[in-house]
Image 1: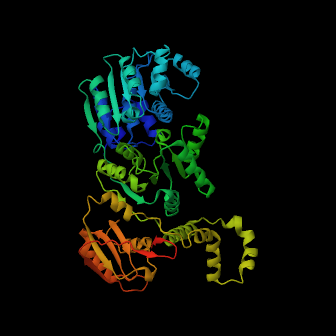
Image 2: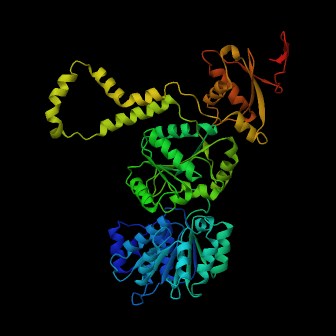
Image 3: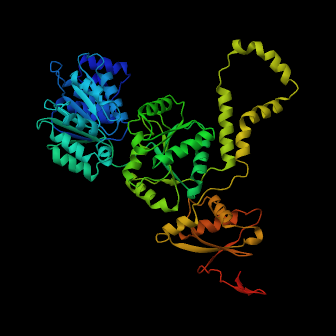
Length: 550
C-alpha cells in the first residue's frame, strides 16, 4: 500500500493532501501519479467512476505549473457543469498552499460575461465543458497556445453526449507538443478513434478490467408488468430502510413523475433533470449530499458530476439501451471499498436490453422476487426496534416529564406497552401491505422471450379450477419451491381437476422432488411428466338464439 508521503511531491501539495485526510493512494492513483511525475508523454487511463481519478491527474498536473507565467497551462474537459465544478473544487483544494495558482471553471448555463472576466484574471488551470470552452475559443476569450497538459475526463461520456466535433475542434486548437491525458471508465470504439487521432503512442494504464463492474456491487433485477413498476419501486425502497440512492429514468418527464409520486407517498425524494434551473439543481444536489433527500430521481445527463461516495443503491427504472451506461450507473455505488447494490426493474420487452448489460458486465444479474408484504413489514419492524435499542437517552432533559408519563401508562402491562408503542410507528406499513398482490411477472412472458433458448418439459399437476387455481397462483407456487431463481415457465393450461404447465427441463428431477415435498393450500401435490403439451380445444354450445363460444 503506497502512501502519499512515499512519493516525491512538493511540500505544499503534501500539506493539502493531509488536510483532505488522504493517506493511501487508490489503485488508479498508484498507477498514474508516479508515472506522470516521471513522464511527459501521452496517457490513456481506464478506471471506473469514483476511484479517485481527479487526484490521479490533478496532483501531477499541479507540479508542472509555472507560477511565473500568467497563462492557461492546463486545460481539463469534462461532460457536465456539475463535474466541472467538482474538478475545479478539487484542484483548488490540492493547491490550497499554492496561492499563486488559479483555477477557473467555464460551463454552460452560467453568465458568459462573468466567465470571461475570470479568464481575464489569467488562471493557469481551466476546467470546462466542451461547448462553453469552444465558445470561449471562438470569441477569443480563451487562448490555448501555452497549454502544456490537456486532460479529457470521462471521455466516453463526453462522446456519448454528442461532444465529438467540439472536442476534435478544441484539441486541434492546442499545441502539438502538449501532453494529452485521457481518462475514461470504458474504451468504446469512438474513444479509441479519438485517441488514435490526437495522441502520440500513448502509455496505457488500467485500474481493473475494462467494461466490467466493480466486484463489491451486487446486481439484481425484478421483472414486473410495466404498469407495476412504481409499486415495485416502493416495495424495494421499503425493504431497505437505510436506502440512500439514485433512481435513473430515461426522460425528464418520467423523472419528475416518479419523484412527485414518491413525495406524495411520504418518501424523502426529489428530481434532478435538465428542465431545472441552475439554482434549483444546486439546491437539489445540496439536499441530496446532506442526506435530507434519500432518493434522487435523475436522468443520466443530470446526474453526471454528482460525486457521492456512500450510496447504498442504484435503481434503474428500465435497463439502459447502451450497456456502458449500465456500468456507469452501477459504478456510482460500492465506492471506497463499501458494498453496493444495483437494481433494474424490467418488463418483458426490456429483457433483451438487460441481457446485453449483463454480457458487458461480465457477471450474472440475478433475478429477485419482488418483496411481499410480510417480509417488508418484518424488515421495517426490526429496523425500528434496532433504532430504539441504539437511541441515546438524555436523562436530564426528559426527567421532569417522566413522572406523569409513568403514571399515565401505569395501567398497561409490559407486553401491552410494547405492542402499542410499535403500533404507533408501524400501523402504516401493516395497513398498506395487508393482502397486497404478487407483482412478479417472471413466468409466461419471460418464457416467450427465452423460448428459443430453453428446453421445456410439460408437467401435469393434480390441481385445477376446483381448487380456485389461477395462472398467477400457480406461478407464485412454482417460484416458492425455490428450485432455482426465476425458473423459466412456459405455457399454462388449467382444467377442472388438473393443470398442464411447461417448466425448464433442466430442473425436471428437482421439480418432481419439490412438488412431492410441498403442499398447495394443504393439498398433497402429485406431479408427472407428460409427453407433450396439449392445448384445450375450443367447443361450441347452441343457445336459443345463436351459436356462441364457451
